[in-house]
Every structure is written in C-alpha cells, then in structure tokens.
Image (cartoon, rainbow, N blue to C red; front, side):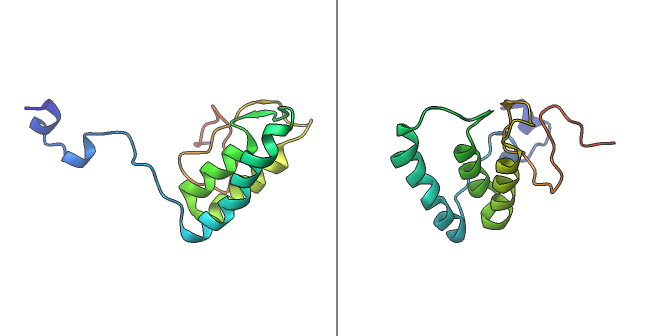
Amino acid sequence: MNKDRAAGAHPAEEHNTAAPTRPTPVAWVLLLPIRFYRKAISPYLPPMCRFYPSCSAYAAEALTRFGAARGTYLAVRRLLRCGPWTPPGRDPVPEKFSFRYQGPGMSTEE
C-alpha cells in the first residue's frame, strides 16, 4: 500500500503534476495568430527574444493556462517589458495569476 494513502491522503493528491489545461474557446481563437506567427513567420527571422521562453511561447502558455482575459493581460504585460530597459533572462508564466509582476525569485510576501 502506498504510504501517502496510509497517511490518509486523497487519491487525487498523489500526483503533483497538473493535467494539461485546454484553452477556452475565446483563448483558442486568440491563439490562432500566435500559432500562425510561430509556424509561418518566426522561422524566417533571426532569434531576437530577450527572455526565455520567447514572447510567443509565453503568450500561448498564458492564454492556455489563464484564459482569454487574464492570458492577454499577462502577454501584453510581458511585451511591454521587452526592451533595453529590462535585463534579459528567464521569465516563466506565473503559477498563480496576479496583476502585480512577480519576477523570478521575487517574494510574494512583503
């Protein structure tokens, strides 16, 4: 018997990996131009993104994970950060949505 089950854990809590989320219908429509850009335009351009993941990958993940409104907000906020005034580096989509920017390694408690 699994020791988590013996301790009384719920069977759904055994796996920490989240199931892949599906985009909402509106988010799916918003993903179409991003998918077109990534397949038809991006391969012909030199790599220029300051962040990892790229802005198009970030937008696709944000729309899929958080839906149309929140995903669009996160994608636009990311595009506004893309410039010489921001240091480059790793900038993943946040685990939990917030209107405040939580950079990697920044504490949410103040």
